[in-house]
Image (cartoon, rainbow, N blue to C red; front, side, top):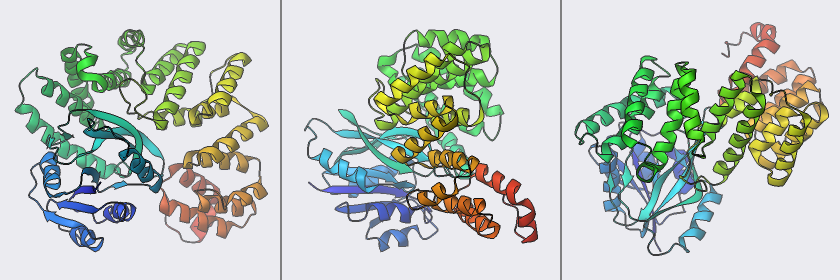
Length: 468
């Protein structure tokens, strides 16, 4: 069996080395289709042994189809230039390839979308792996024209969310392409309705820059929902996620009564998506119904644990952008006031399932030493930056200098833990040095604000530029 890696790229000299380092030696060939780079993209690709082909830009599907044409593998795995493939995920894929039934034409895989602080901001999925000869369609949000597809719990890392300026630039580009496509589609056709989904998605991203786009998103979301008419068989995940988009749009416009009525209609259908249960939590907590709110938050945490392990284990597959919102709730707000029996229910659930997000809820509802014990277990089990920062905050508040020192060799955020150690040791120059080393890697406003407040006079005396 021969495996081909396929990449389309334009001016990706910044991202490309990370991807190519992660896939070189794993594939029989790497095909790179360049659509007009003016930087060192082609030279970098050739230095890694890629087969490089120049191709005039005519949309994403057209570029991917050129890669399909040039690839000689039995299976083709498509990568964007800002992806990365970890060794463990590649090994899982190799094992899977040996077991795929002959009638399966393509595989959907998970995508971990990282932000600038090194945290997973969102999970998504796409059909990036398929058999030779299968072609793609769509100028933007393109997809392969396949028959039988299965979703598999293999993930690639995606760093395109780490730079907001780049995201907005891509969104403006996508908006233009979508408007061109939708203008040529038959009104009320399935393809037209599907493009409405991506139009709403693009408007919502652009609304973070210009609020007027939110009104456009609301209009198109309502058009999509009217035309899709709760037809889950035809629109599946797109319909499920549009329900979430619309709930959040109503929340943004403070149309709470309309939101509550629409939410009840959705909850009656028991649609499993973490975002829907999280907004139900927010809605009922705002009303003061804390027991109901807790039940919805617990369900959101359970679903988040399911999705992050295998995005294809829920009925429609799953994308989730709920992780940062869920984490911010725990970071910035007090938990609901509930009887101790609820804490015991949560503790039993976490002991049984050991889910990361169930564990975060248990941490949130705990206090004193038990709080520290929970976050120590979570950080050790899951090894991610957010959990390590929570652990460090707990240790700093208790002035656990020696415990911080012992953890330095085991944590991902090594510079941050070294800085905290020197912080507690009152060695300010060393502490500032390592805090700045950490902040040079991660755009972390939480730590930056702490450093400014903690060492403001020292930073000024050293003549250092502002951090924030």
